[in-house]
Figure 1 (cartoon, one colour):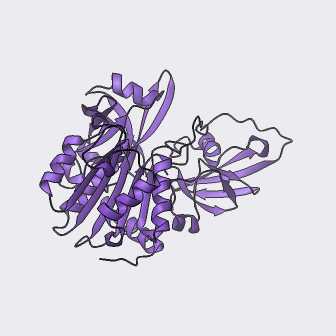
Figure 2: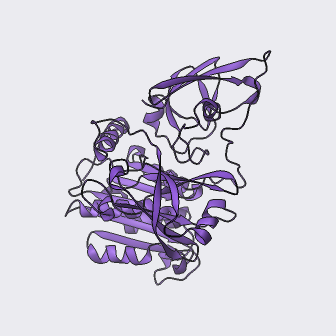
Length: 397
């Protein structure tokens, strides 16, 4: 089965699905907001990861409807400082209770070395605790209008499995003839998140789910599945296990190096980039400090400034941003609109996405926006810096 759907058409399908997922008009996008949710369960997955399940009150069911592959931002205060992190939803929506919307949502949190929030969550988070959770968002979702006979492939590393868990379960459940091939790489068996759930999914769909665990530090019976995935190993995996000519849609999720290797290799063998969707959990820049958000900036009367106008929830606000400050649109916006949406502030999650209506900007990093979104004028406000005297951005579009 082949598909000649363009990137623009993919975006149109995705946005219409996002609208219908929350009961909104066709083609609309939901305004994301934080809501306080109760932690229903904390379950150990591996020595370094947990699954956290939140209860969704009846009144918020519509707000927390989602598509497989989407993510939520989580917010709390640690040592007097607000901390935000973004995590993919790891269960298919039907697993959350069905009906008009999920009764629970679940995310997986893996401890990062030196990670402030992830370390706290591993050691301190308990059932009954309450956290601020943003309504789901993201376009790391399937755009296939018809899953009958479709073959979807995913390549994940480590905690990159979380959105692919939901995607695989959804693709396989919604058509009796769909197939999913998953290549999942870890250091060893003890590092595999959702090991039992993946085995159960394989038992449920033995002929339609192809599951390949690649372990870099543990010997497997098949030499091809033992060792780090480099270009040579990836090409052999594709040739013998995935068969790219049969794949209709690709999902890549993990650290920057692996995702970029997969993108480059797929492009080299002729896979249309419009059929490849990717999501990063890290940018690959060691020691990179996330952009400050909401830092104080003093405007002197005699210095040149950029005039930044922000529209959010139908209300427009203007703030002056000193040229010498070199601050992001997000940082300026937060001074007049502290409710401006953001999570990672590193150009990865896409939470701060807005449309550039007037003026021009330079974007430092972009790991979240698709090419067609850029063509339509969307920017990541956390990474965008004004280059004209006046800049107007709209979060509502």
